[in-house]
Length: 370
Ligand code: NAD
Image: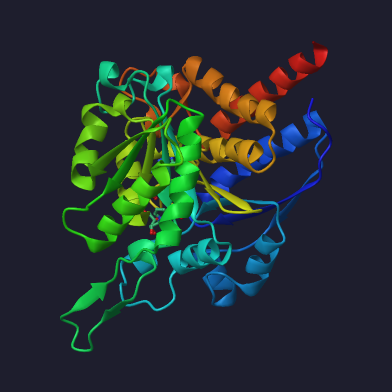
């Protein structure tokens, strides 16, 4: 077993289904902490709409201070329909998340896209196209158009957003992505729009420069429109995919359909000491409070926390394998069920969370017995 380690984990449940799904990820981490004798210390803070309602700010100072002092952060999701229907709202839940990522300098967003055998039929794509897919996205997270200058002219007929990248911003994310490709199949697709955008031409030139330190990795450049098409035509061709902020946001939502549902996709946002872990999905107001959300993306994000922040590979695998085990038994939340799923196998959030937890605990017990 790994040595005893004290780790401070800040949980930010956020809005909508955020509290429902983070509950199960935290419960899994608590069980692992107990079973492996890791004293994980949990603290909970407000973010997003919940924080605006309580304090007027989507990222209260107290939350930011707690996060800065953490070893790792587990986030649910932010967002509320109130703001989606009011584009003029000055204070918005997403501002809290963007500010947190920027303040902690979380520039590298890792999004693994894997196909679970048991779920190959939950996807809208054909099984033979999907089988064997294993992609790791490296999305730049603190630059690009989401952070550039923006504005709306006073008469309201003209608005603009600016897409800008510096060489340094590109070098640091590209270096991480090449390093990851070295430990995988050794292929890196860099996605840009260099036929049109100046920022993409800098992106491409810089990625080529970085690639010289990684002669064992095959570099492929792909325009973003082609990448969107290739992802569903032949996802197996991809190993590591390197993208800017907005292209990665869009392509990973598209790629979620390879895993069957947004409810299956975890992510890690990394830089230096602190890592933040969150599902790719949003606050899903359409199902919030109905005990219908799939908690697996958030539980898989907790597994990424164990791997990337705490170097606890065995513990991380335990969560991943327990989820795979529950899927193999045929249990499904609604988002990954299809017309062939027996009604008795369709679970609520709490039912599937309980099943996964039981698997984690029984596997831990078995490994202690061995
Ligand atoms: P969404 O990801 O919340 O939902 C899209 C669809 O997927 C919905 O039909 C939803 O029910 C379903 N879905 C998502 N997660 C699921 C899960 N775990 N289990 C089962 N089904 C799931 O995206 P949206 O509807 O475009 O946005 C809703 C709100 O979330 C908005 O306010 C948006 O701004 C916010 N948002 C936040 C984040 C974030 O916090 N990182 C990311 C995306 C969107």
